[in-house]
Structures are given as structure tokens and as C-alpha cells.
Length: 289
Image 1 (cartoon, rainbow, N blue to C red):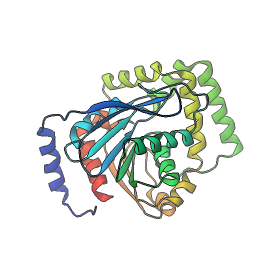
Image 2: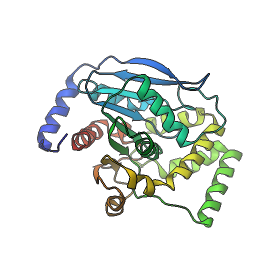
Image 3: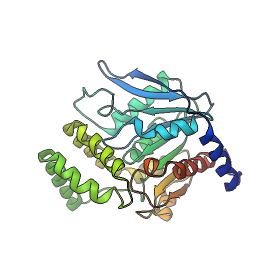
């Protein structure tokens, strides 16, 4: 797809799609290793598939406004990563290589074609991983409020700091989550209902699994530069304006380039806080790929 549609026309198309009745979607499961299932929503019949992957501690329901908006034009799939939502939890190790394999299994079992991976928060690293080790049938990547700068290996002090943080989380998960998330992931303008929804979902997660997933994310984040250099498809970002995005550094590593679309005045969950503006930015990103 080429970026050749005026912005005003995109706004009109977005407004028109919002007036349509919400599409029906099916809920299903794919089988992973024995005893493990991965839950998903699916709707739409387009030849391009938007595959939405949620962030840490939350689930596929966070993409409901995007299913409503994009299913008339595309095939849309939203998943619960194992360990979260309605997917299985019977694993010992929780690495991003495993998660990448899970996404590959889902794409194969659902026979998805021309896939654009859309990953929120920690899943920015996951979509990079999927695209570098399973490049087919990926045609583009869209990160949601993530990948603000390309991560590399940590030094010994950073490793010690991370290990201390994980130990604190394992000792007192709820208190640590409150201190870190409420300070860093929400804005004063974030509605209380959204803050409470996110916090409730994180508290409902298995704390041991949640911490192990964060450990896996920390390991994978150190490989961002290397993964970006291997990308065979473009990367777009739809980020809030709270933290700056270092496009110069990102373009240094991404051979296919990076395009940034900003949703202003939100915290870490722009798809919930400003769904209309977010969907317009996401549509622009899709058309850029």
C-alpha cells in the first residue's frame, strides 16, 4: 500500500466507518503445546489481516474499539497471549521466543495472509521478534506506545537494577505495580474508569507469570537494535506524546524506515483513552505500509 490518500479523506472514511453497526466477531482458540490453548477474537473478510497483540497484564478486550472500526475493511484478529486473559497458563518458562512461536502457530492454524502485526507496550518487542524469525506472511509492523528508542545490551548496573526490581515485584506484586504503573503509565487526564480497569486486570493476572514475562521482555529489549537491523518490512509507531520518540536513532537501525504517528494527551493506553483519534492514526499507519 502507498501513502497517497489525503489526510482529510482519511478522516472522512474514519467518520463513515464509525457510523456503521458494530461487526460480529467470533471467539475461538488455537492449540499450542499439549494442554495449552490461545484465545482469540476474529472478524472481517479483507485480504489483509490486522493481528492485534496486547501489552503486559491486559488482554484482547482492549482492542474492542479497533475490531468495531477495522473489521469492515480488514480481517482482524486479537489474541490473548498465554498467561493472560482466557489463554492457558500451564508453562514453566515464559520467553518471547515462545510467544513468537505462539503467534506463528496461530497464523498457520488460521491460515492468515498479508499480516500486519500491531503490538502494544511490551508486544513491540514481540512483533519485532516474530518478524525476524518468522517473516512470512508479515507485511508490516505497527508498535503502539513503545519502541521510543532502539534498545541494546544493558551494563552491569542496569542488570542489577532490573534484578532488584523483579525481586521486589515477586515479594510484593500489588504494591510495586501501584507505585510503578500509576506513576508512569497514566496521565492526570486519564479517566478513573480506565485506570481502574487496567489495574484490576493486572492484579487479576498470575503474579509469578507476569514477572517472568517482564523478565523475558527485559531480555528481548536488549536485542531491539539487532532485530531492527534484520527487518524486511517497514515499522510504524502510534505513540502518545508523553515520552519522546527518537526517530533518528530508530531510522539508523531500521533499514526499511520508521514512521511515527502521535496521539496527543493520553497515557500508555491511547486505544482506550482516545479511540477515535487513535483509530485515525492507526489507519494512516496501515496505509503507509
